Image 1 (cartoon, rainbow, N blue to C red):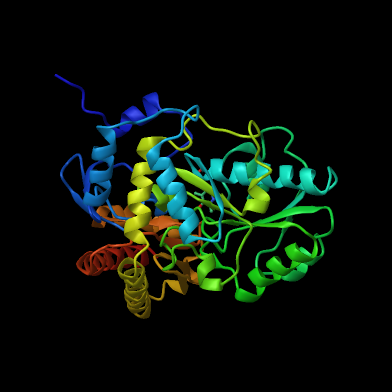
Image 2: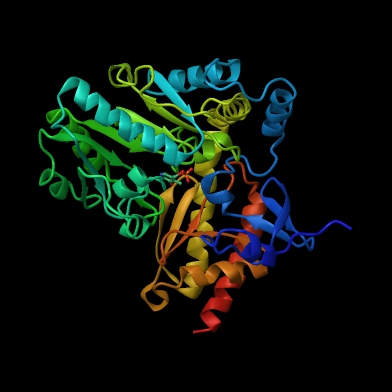
Length: 404
Ligand SMILES: *Cc1c(COP(=O)(O)O)cnc(C)c1O
């Protein structure tokens, strides 16, 4: 008889760097999931803003199956049709002229940071090496990206961190002005901080960063790994602001669940990434590119993007109704289908306590730090699933309130 894996197997066999929930989902369809016992869940977590079209969307399954029977992988010794189509689709839809493909958000940011440093050396000299980023920001788990990220808990305890990295306060332009200078190579910023608590950059702040970069001949890098590919209600969040970066990174929703990442850049910047400067065995993998192309083409339509904005309003209405009854939230915020509800003072730090209660009620949700309940569902989640998911969330919150 074959062994049925259990949650205990995680503790036996897996590195202990995660602490997953007790249930093991085995099947998904749209915004619903089923666990080993056949219990059904509504998915407001979306695999952390990844499952942009829910689970097993026919368009993505078809792209995977069709490419899967044709050609999976070549390495970058050859190029391939899906990668070329994906790069063309991204260039035609954005500010960018060139695309570097990889397999995750951290790798896209690693590429962006290395490119920025190389561009500065090529165009200005070795002294121009300072990278400014923001407290609470998250840019990935490679050593360069945790160091640039603004959450020291992710970079401490691994020995000396890379130098030339400075942190300013998000939405505080004055704090950036104090650090910026002619030795500034790049400013890396999330247009909306995701892991940092679902905090949107203000128009004035992001415009101010653009102006400072122009003034000091530094590059503006938008990390859109979490906000990109329809999540904000536009293809990329920068489009909501009308502020254009020099480099943009994308992953998460880009593959709808298939691991893929991309770094987008202008020609003037990308030309520093000459032969041999950077690479990835899997980057531009044919299977990943075929799925990402299908996701981008499906999502970047007026119907899907308008639908994200409508669903945002629906999420907000439901959360406000729950809050009028139970008073658990201080603020409900976010863009498109990346939303956060900050806990009220009486429930300070208790966002994480909602998650297991929600699981028991049949709902998957997320947190962003200890104090913010986060939702990043499928961009095409049916209205009926939103209504039912919110009923389940309300029951979880009633139980949280009852334990006070
Ligand atoms: C998730 C995330 C990353 C890291 O992406 P990985 O695919 O986990 O490497 C980087 N930046 C932001 C803003 C993210 O949300």
